[in-house]
Structures are given as structure tokens and as C-alpha cells.
Image (tube, rainbow, N blue to C red):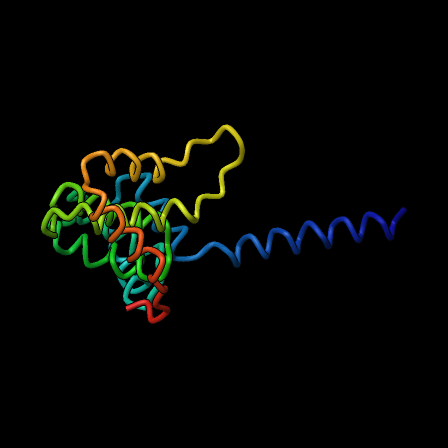
Length: 167
């Protein structure tokens, strides 16, 4: 029994230490965002984003798109969304597609928007009964496009390859 208790305590301590080790700047940035402490969030995200962390790049893009703690700057938002999207990060692909639909930071371009929605939709891992919002957005957008535009967007999506540079 004593051995069992010692093993249980050891496993608990390992779990605590691993959890603490897993907490880092990205988790701290998320917490700062929840508190509305955008200065701290930006300070933590910027180095991670510059190192190529796609989640940090997307969060930084969100900050610029929404003007949270930084002046609203759609061009800067697109820059960060694109860096993450080109690595295959679905959230950034969705955000970049929406920028193309709205013409925010980039010229309005339904072919590019459809391509990015399509790529994001292909990474959807939801189960039965979950809505793939990227597929729905892509399909709704297709109603505004010509068959030639849809074909071009589909070709671009098929030929797309992720870039792992992070920059």
C-alpha cells in the first residue's frame, strides 16, 4: 500500500511539473487576452510570432485586425495571418480568407478567399453534427463566383503546399 501511495504521489508531482513546464509565453498571452491586458499579450506574442509560431502569428493578426492594444491595421493583420496560413494553420487560413472577402488589408478577391476557406475546411476535424464553418463559408462564397473562378480557386487549393519557414 505504501508503495502504491508513493507511486501515486510521484505521478501527481510529474503531472504538476509537466503542466507547469507546458505553461509558457503562449499560455500567458492567452491569459493576458482574457484579462484584456493587451500590452502584455503583445509583448509575449511578438517574439513567438517572429520565431514562426503560427498560433502566435494568428493571435497577433487578430490583435491588429481588431485594434486590440495596437492601432487597427488590416495590412499588418494580413501579414501575420498569411505567415501562419502558409504554414497550414487553419485558424489563420480562415482569417485570411475573411480578409479577402471583405477587402481588408488586401484587395477583395473571391478566388483567394475560396482557396483559403477550402484549405481551412480540409483541416476540419469536428465529429458528426459539428458544422465545418469554413466549408459553409466557402460554399456560400461560391454562390457569388463564376464557374471559372471556382475552378481556379480549387486548382490553387490543390496545388498549395505549406511553407515551414514561419516567416
